[in-house]
Image 1 (tube, helix red, strand yellow):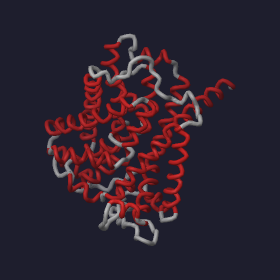
Image 2 (cartoon, helix red, strand yellow):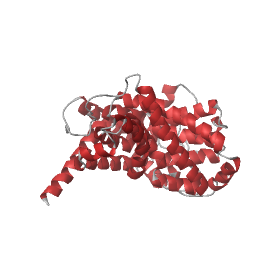
Image 3 (spheres, helix red, strand yellow):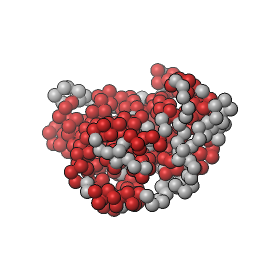
Image 4 (spheres, rainbow, N blue to C red):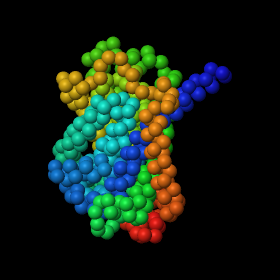
Length: 401
């Protein structure tokens, strides 16, 4: 019994240490995302994605990267955009970018694994989106899209539909800073910040706990045998194939997957395998079931297959591009998985500063009507009637939307 408790405490200690290491970067990323969402209305996004042209796909990718979301919220928002008239390919590009090309993901990758993985994220992500668009243009029939639109128009309630329906942006005119620093702007930022945390906190916690357990309990020899570390060529071929399958088994969002990605990297998975693993948050089993409800069974399988193929391809491309440029880390692997515990260093100072910022935003959220928004978060389209265009906070009185 003593050894069991020791092992459990060891796993929790690793998870806690990793949490402390990434806290400031998460708060920074979600704050920047909240600022952008406070100034851009969701109702305008669909009009900017009318087709699958390079312009629409580029716009969808940029807006998705700026509109950070957990996987579930991103899928719900993509459905909402599709129902409002956005092209299906563009909606899927937006969905992918909003989970895998976001600031907080890049920051955590750099902190736990190294800047090379952040660079791989921003190179492999656009490649995957382009490849997806080409596959959709060649193999996705108009009938399948029409059937999916009919299914999407049905009032299917999901756990994130209320969140996706909310629009907390600030209207009016004026400069960026004037709108942002106004009472309405600060309130909108606080509401977006807390709602994004509410959407993703569960997945981050699960990901950290899984990573802590894997680092504490699974011996290195298991990973080395699984990833063919004794055969470098086989490891590079096998890594992108098995990486997404690990993500399916972990069933957490891309940000929550990063701590486990660090464990897998230390265990011997290839560089491309890490990239494919991170990108695969959109084919986990709960997400596939949501695709089935939103778009029908046939399109669910089509998305599962095409997403998997493009994720594997992105891993191979990253290996082929980064290898000759000597951008793949070599030598002993020492990704941070919480072995050093919590120490008084720059991370501690940054956490103090950003936790103070988070506390201020949370206080603003609850003092401007935010509690009711949390209750609305899990509502379906009928529950959210009137919330698709959430009224902006009234300048000067400090009230929330």
